[in-house]
Amino acid sequence: EADIYQTPRYLVIGTGKKITLECSQTMGHDKMYWYQQDPGMELHLIHYSYGVNSTEKGDLSSESTVSRIRTEHFPLTLESARPSHTSQYLCASSPLLGEAAGNTIYFGEGSWLTVV
Amino acid sequence: AQSVTQPDIHITVSEGASLELRCNYSYGATPYLFWYVQSPGQGLQLLLKYFSGDTLVQGIKGFEAEFKRSQSSFNLRKPSVHWSDAAEYFCAVVGGTYKYIFGTGTRLKVLA
Image (cartoon, rainbow over all chains, first blue to last red; front, side):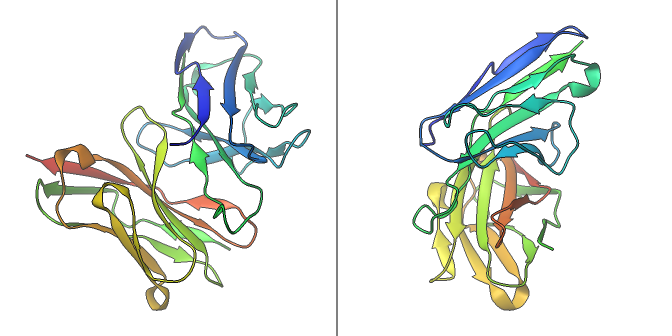
């Protein structure tokens, strides 16, 4: 079982509020990711990181920002939430390289965000 | 460029019937291939993965998948489906850039 945790699992907030979705992993993985997924739809990579102080934009443009100050922690922040941000956000991690680890990507259980 | 195609958006099978979910990929060399399952309201759980060697790989929950290079496919199979298998299934490929590409998913419905 993967050791990657997301909080909150479910959040309902008002438009214009600032929110931070937390993600932590205890596997020592260098690479971490944030995916956005609407119900029943495909996953879209919005941010990733190769390690501490590394952050990159993903394939899908997002108004959110991320930071990577510690290896195990990769929070995602929305400065001013809007209804269009309503979605599920999945955090994931993987070893940077390594045949032995197989480059498997491990997912958290997701954070469901609803902006009203 | 890498890509993954899951041709079936929805599949419905009866409990106890066999299952095959299709996955085709596009990549110049042999990629790393994965199948993940996502239950409603949950994250993705790894079912199985292929890197090299035996082209038939066994996973958790009684699933298996076969890598066929000539067909660029990595189809997921289960001989007898259980009601608890109802979920969304994602195929994924990792190529030389270590970038994960996910398919659009196949939603499985199991009839009692």
